[in-house]
Image (cartoon, rainbow, N blue to C red; front, side, top):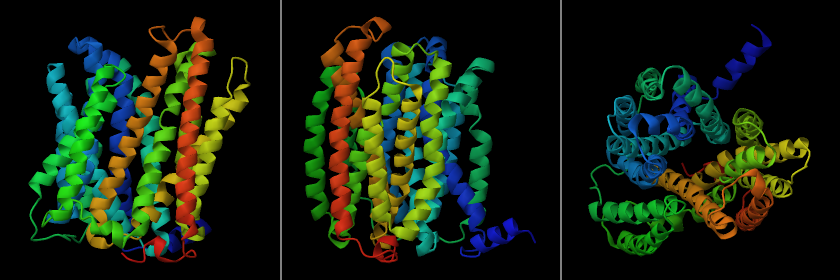
Length: 481
């Protein structure tokens, strides 16, 4: 037997039988949601021309997907607690595949928007259940590695989406991007059905908190829709007020409900949960807008073609894909809190590097900034997930993982709102074009200062959590599961 085979056998000997195939299925599941974000972005022009959709409708194609995600991340996790993680995951994969294929047949933009919302809802439920199952089935000393591998699929999906989406739209038409979900969707359903041999129903016998679900849906829906549509219709930002009020009523109700969606006691039982969620929200809020700025910088300031700009920006994506499994392994060895704090620090250095870009900055500087950003995001994701969920009691795990998904999406929406506000403030109605490069650079730098402040806040949260961290091998690596 070769040395490589021996190492592979020794690696999988630490896990339950069939775990390697199961991990492949969970990895593919995590690929779906980001792929249908970045991939659909690439086919929006073709989609709009075919369906005769206006620009505002095309923007809603992305907003309603995020809306479905942010609403059903937590509710989908609760479904798993009530009716079984395995059952809900298999049902979600099945519905997601059917809805995706159906999207390829849409006759008009209204039907497209409805199906995109369902896609986002199913994708969020899949993500919540996958994370909970991965945390439960992985050995405590290897949870970082498992979550790191699963997280790498998210970054790979974001990377491959524009390439595959653009290629499919050019060669055979945009509808085939959705038809193409059928083979992997069917394959992953079969893999999961065969390899998940147990069921987890932590809230069996309890009822769904319908008033809580409605309050949560309306509150998060207003916040997500208001933030997502701000760049198109600034008046929509006022939706944040009823959204915040509704969320306040939701939390009040959760303390009193007999079978709450979010059992507020878990925040007392898991001291690191709230800080981990805040760190997730802040870090994604400070980094998700970087792709937008770098794309426009390369094309409008440096004169790159869209193709060459896309190639340059893949540096960050590949750094994320490579760093994510490594970050998970480092979390297992040195402690998840320490490595997640390191990831936030690297993100901050990357933001600083991008903020210093000018008209004649060497491309090597931009590449190094992207590597820092990508490495930081990859190093942050899995360790923060393990540090946050590792202390959560098993009965709350699926809901907690769903809340993490909501915070990640909300962080991205925060980034969009900040960017839209800054562009409106500095550039007004001026187009983003080479003749306005100086104004654009000022806008970019000012916005990145805001992102830098957010990053510092996130780092402070991480350091505060680090101050109370047990040595590696302690409870933060999942001792309570």
